[in-house]
Image (cartoon, rainbow, N blue to C red; front, side, top):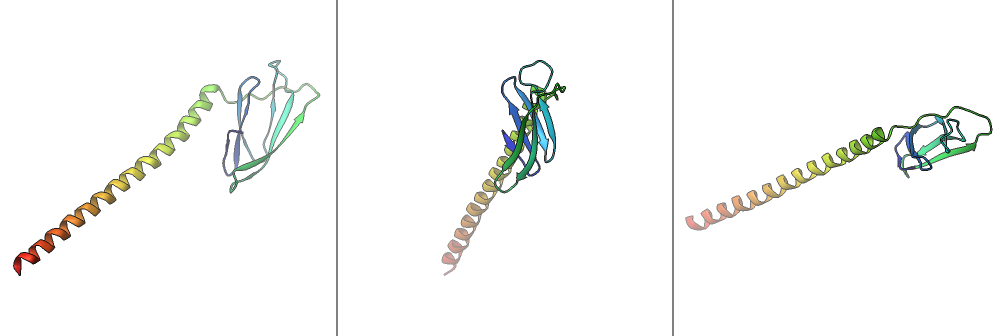
Length: 123
């Protein structure tokens, strides 16, 4: 598993790279030796959104069942890029907020210093 959300898990099979995104209760049949027939079935039983851990059941298939197609490599990479973009937006917004806070702090210090200087000059 490469990613777990509150209701899904991304499972990558490495024999012939295949990526599947399963929702809780969903089952796929995976082809491990590229013969077009599934050798195993994988079911996502549950996801703990707090610990980000998923429970899966893997069963060996003995009868000939057509294999499910995983996400195309480009789709899998595109989903990863979208996830990275969302993190990038969070970082950009955080940096902007920090810059504004520092600027306001510096501006208020200079303003207070100018007020104190004026008070001293009047006395």
